[in-house]
Image (tube, rainbow, N blue to C red; front, top):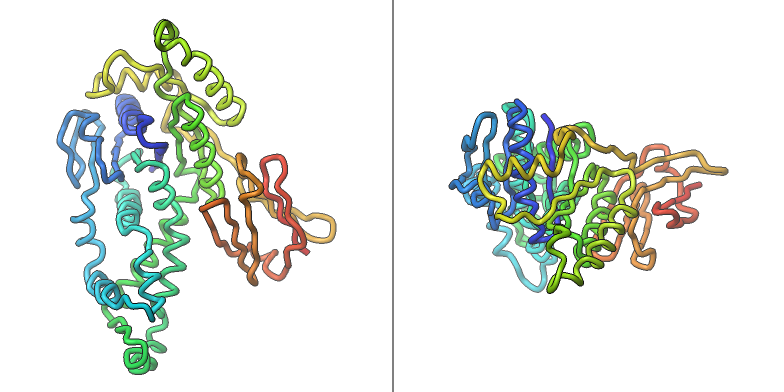
Length: 386
């Protein structure tokens, strides 16, 4: 199954683009499911049909759904939910564990990720199109596997034998209830699911992300920032869609000043994302709603391109021998090096860009090495080890 995620700043039209893409692929004979993970669902509005938590047939080969997190919450958490609720009520000034628990990034993102994995494993569709939430929430979703692993290891002692031995001491001293065997089973199942999901999401032959933007400087800037963050987490971006371009005939009178703004923005996108396919869609004279209109829009965007293909694949992380040691390069354009931080702790390095941060275990050949220097040059972070 092919999985394509559409993201972008709120209001750029990613839901319409995702829906239109699904219509085009389905009309060419592939079975497609388009799914919304945005809690402010608008996929129903795009198709002018009420969607729910189960796939609804829109037309031949085309199905759509909007995730209901209340239902998915019950299906996913089971006994684990009760244990988490116990931990949640332990919040006090003295227990840092409860503080960490309360900043656990939204359960909604986890439910969306698990649903993507379940649909992939069922294998009922040729293509899954995911209409993601605006950029910030999408990053929460996509960095979840890394954060989830950290969180689970912080909160839950995985070795149940050791847990049974220390159970009376922990419960008596720091007043944290230990998981039961049933809870342990659920934790381990969930942990395994997330691990498998992470491998799936990093498979660049299956999963790619497309960024939707508009020709405005502030929106283009966010698209670049998203691109950097996605590369930091090793996700493949295989397309940029510029939506809501003013047609030439409309750039008169009141809108005349927009001509220069949008020309500069489009040129900036073309220069910045060289190599990655860039698609353009002019502002339509009607709302992007209902199947026929979405189909028309998709043909305008993709023309002869098959949108279900992997349109571009980049090698984001590379390790090469370098003089007295090794060089780890991360292809990460659009970064202000003043906002870049790097640290090493044993076989793990932590990279921060402004308010985004990723900790990753080094490849085996680098685990016994120490960082000697690092440089950000030509859109790449180069880290030298010896």
